[in-house]
Image (spheres, rainbow, N blue to C red):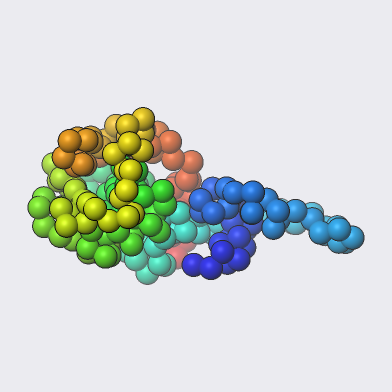
Length: 205
C-alpha cells in the first residue's frame, strides 16, 4: 500500500492503524501548511458513522478485505456457546500472519504477511503460504530451516531477547518456535479496537 494512501487512512481512522503513521514523516505530512485556511470543525458523526469507522479500523489493522471480514463476523455470530465478540477476536488474532507479527518475527503485519506468502513459515513442520490460515491451540509455528539465513531474519534472536510475547503464545528461542497456548483475549493483547461496535454495525445489515 502506498505511503500517501496509508497517511490518508490514518488521518481518517487514527494513527494506530499502520506503523508508518507513527513516524515523524506522518506528523510532518499532517501539519498545517503555512498560509492554509483553517477548516471548519467536522460535524459530529452519527452512531452508524462511528460504527463504520470502528469497522474500518479493524479491517485495516488486520489488512483484511471486506468480504473476508464479513465472513469472520458471520462465523462469529453463528458460533454457539461462545460470545460472538470473543470469537471474532480469536479468528482475527489466530491468523497465521498475525501470530507471526505478534511473535515479533516482523515489525508489521504487512511484513509478516509477506513472510508467510513467500514460504518462510511452517506450521507443525509443514510450509504454509496462506496468511489467513487459522491456527489452533497446540500448533507450532517456525521459520523454515531453509529461510533462517535470509537477510530478513538477521539478528532476530537478539531482537527477541527482550520482546514481550502475548501470554497466549509461547516462544522457544533455541528452536525459534512459537506455540499457541490458549485463546487470546483483547485485554491480554492490549487491544483498543471496539469489536462491539463492529458487531452492531453488521447487525444493521
